[in-house]
Length: 89
Image: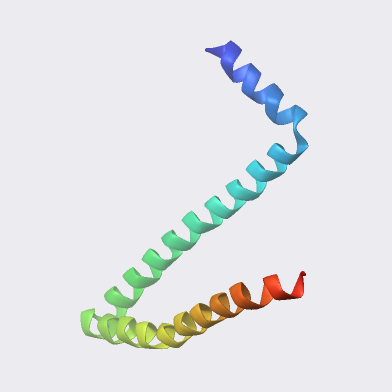
């Protein structure tokens, strides 16, 4: 078992691209987990401080505000798929 772990560690240390990939993805993963925990704590604080009705209003407002940003992202993705190949030829 330790031989296998040493082999993996040697592979990571010898391949700079793999090391960079693991470092970047682990940072993104940790930030994602911290964001999820912070969102949960925020929801808990709103609910305990102002009640379930206020949390419902907040969640509904947040959802309504997110809808235009999602639509805008879809349009941007479609435009990029269409425009990028034509500029590289």
